[in-house]
Amino acid sequence: MRTDTELVVKYEEHRALPDEDFGWVGVFKPTAQTDDSFASAEPPAHDDWVVSGIQDARMKRDVNIALREIRNRVNEFVAPLDQADRAVGDAPSAASLGNKLASLLVGLPGNAPERTPGPRRGSSGVRRPSARVDLIDAGPSSEPGWTSMRFGIRLERGSPLGEWVAVVPSVGYDGGSGTKDIDQWIRPVGWMPSHSLEPMLVKSGRAVEYLVECRDDVALDIDVKIVNPE
Image (cartoon, rainbow, N blue to C red; front, side, top):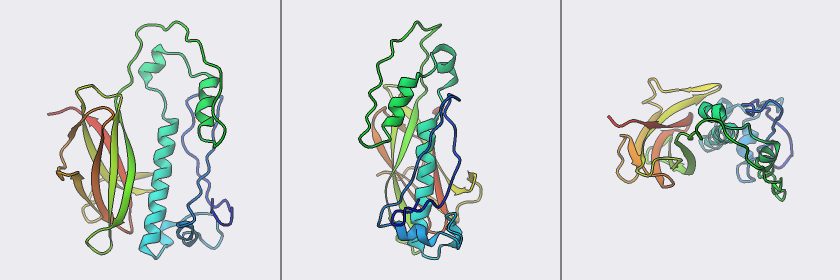
């Protein structure tokens, strides 16, 4: 929704929670500094944000980044449990879910009672390693019409010795993203400060940085994968 006018502009349906008995809803409001960018993306009906209709490169970048980060944050929040965990673990309790949802509301901490764990069947199950991606900053590139984006990547639940992490940039579009013939739109610079594009050995809990440049008129998607060294 818009910040100044408190106007709900765009509705989107995202992934559901693993437990069908629970639903969720979220609201995104741009900061006052970027509200004009979203206003420029609205058609006459004020019922959508259309990036292709924005003429100003900076405003287009603001909206592109926001829409991508909304999708990333939603995926992190509602990501289902690994199938291995589902096979051997208990379903998440209402108390656990309540605590997670309450953490999204300022001033409403989750105070649900602790759940006493019951006996588990089989092995305990191990979560696979994953990587969290955060946009650190974005600004004009040295080439006009291009934007430089610096991402922070943090490995979670990885081996103490580290995991090999690969970054795959792609062009985002409604409903997905593409990695074919994108050289004219995206230029990966690589891991900082080496600028290497090869997979990097990252230790769990350690934050590393990756730099990508893209044209102002495209939406950049970043996919981070845990790979096996060759």
